[in-house]
Amino acid sequence: MASGQNPKKYPTTELISKLLRPALTSTYAVYFNVAEILGKSDEVRTFFNNRQANLESELLTLSCSEASLPGSSLMTNEISNDYTGVTERHAYRRLYDDRMDFTFYVDYDYKVIKFFETWMSWIVGETQYKEQSKQTYNYRVKFPNDYNVNMHIQKFEKDFSNKIEYTFIGAYPISINSIPVSYDSSQLLKCTVSFTYKRYYLDNISQIIFGVDSRDSLVSIQDVPQGSRIIGSKDINNNQRQFQYLTPDGNILTTVDRIIR
Image (cartoon, rainbow, N blue to C red; front, top):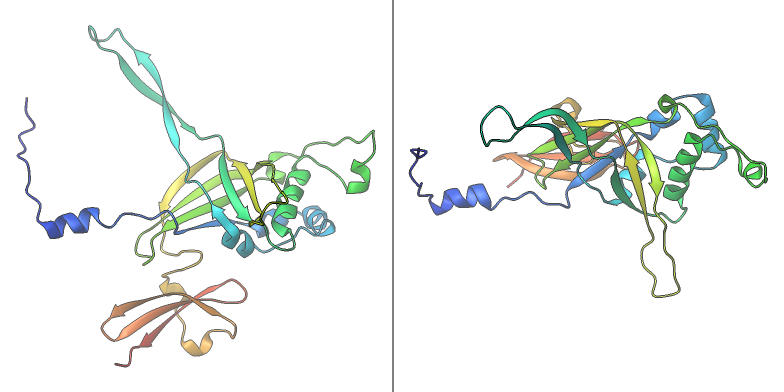
């Protein structure tokens, strides 16, 4: 039986509005909650501080040059006896990708490398370097709740009008790829880290980590701290423009200013 629908004629303007606004790969933000990792116990903070591996979440977000949005699939059971000549597949479980990769620009002080190396050392219960050099060195791996955290990938567009967020439950680094160096012409040093996680879920969001559109943080221009920088702006009507500021302490503030024509 035919679908009963006739081909539709689309005006050019409608085609442009539907097809010529594709999402771009270069507008995203990855958030690693360093405070959650270090806040698990005093022992964790001491471990990271002793290895000089403490850093701000903002550095990881800004230096993440490549990331991958997660994928998943449905596991099915095959049923071939209900209808003659027909094989059916019924879903019974959702299967998540076992890992995701993130590539970071390495900073001058190598904080990114130190941070992830220390995180993995904490997971397997390694002690200080002087103990690791011994022939009889051994370790005991931590319990999962001692090292896994929730992390986020936010995907948005340049005008911040559409935004989605992937939240990963129980994530932690599972490997650090080898980092080649050579005497050839110098290039930016990059570090690729693979994470594993239990599952993820997708949500619509009203606030972007770096480039927000949040009325909850609306302030006057006089209340924006010195040293803040503009990270986004847009016209909200004929005579007003909205600005987003990133403060020195990592907060996002929004102001609305009158446009003088």
